[in-house]
Amino acid sequence: MSIREIGCCGAYCRTCRAYNPGFCRGCKIGYEKGLRDINRAKCKMKLCCFRDRNLETCADCPDYPCKLIDEHFSKKGWKYKQTRKQLEFIREYGYNKFLRIANRWQDCRGKLELAQSI
Image (cartoon, rainbow, N blue to C red; front, top):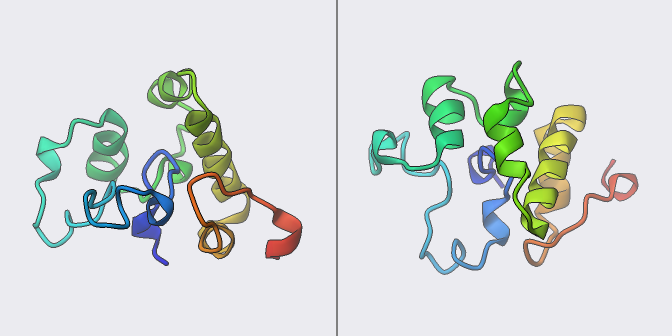
């Protein structure tokens, strides 16, 4: 479990099917060791959050929510609603509580059940 395995948007990498078999390196993993070039990233949220502001996720940003976040979460689809909930959970309860819950998820559709996590 690592904060680096939480994407800037709140997605939890360890539950993603593409991440687990090694097809995806996650949102942030590899940049700190120079294995990847952050300047080549296409995700505007990652560039703003991770490169420009040196934050772990958008949950840490004093400008949350911003235009980038609002645009991202205005898209249709379950994952956008879920990652928004995850960022808001992190903002309220912190990374440790989030990771304790998320590490028990079997897939990306995990639930944030606070009563069981505290």
